[in-house]
Length: 91
Image (cartoon, rainbow, N blue to C red; front, side, top):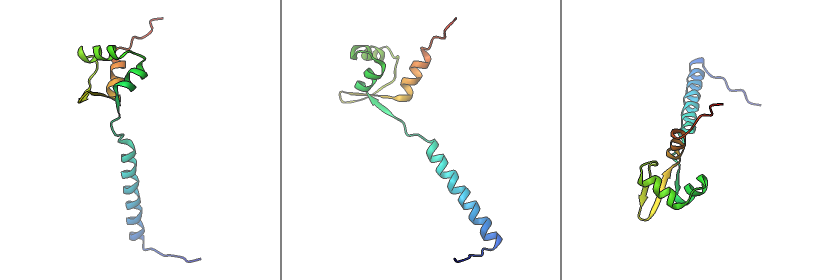
C-alpha cells in the first residue's frame, strides 16, 4: 500500500476543486432541457380530439410551434394551461 502526503494548501485547493466540480454537476442536473411533445401525444395525454386541440390553438388557450404541418407543444405550456384552468374543490 502506497501512502501519498500532500501539503495542506494543495489539499485545500484539491477540496475546493472537488466542490466546484460537484456544484457544476449539480447545476447541470437542475437544468432540464425543454421537453416538446407533438399534437398526437398532446391529444393522447389530455384525451381530447384533434379538433379540440385545434380549437385550443385557434383561441390562444395553448401556445404551440408549427413546422410545416407538424404541431409541437412545450410540456411546460401544457402544465401551465392545466394550472390556469384548475378549479379548486369548495367542499
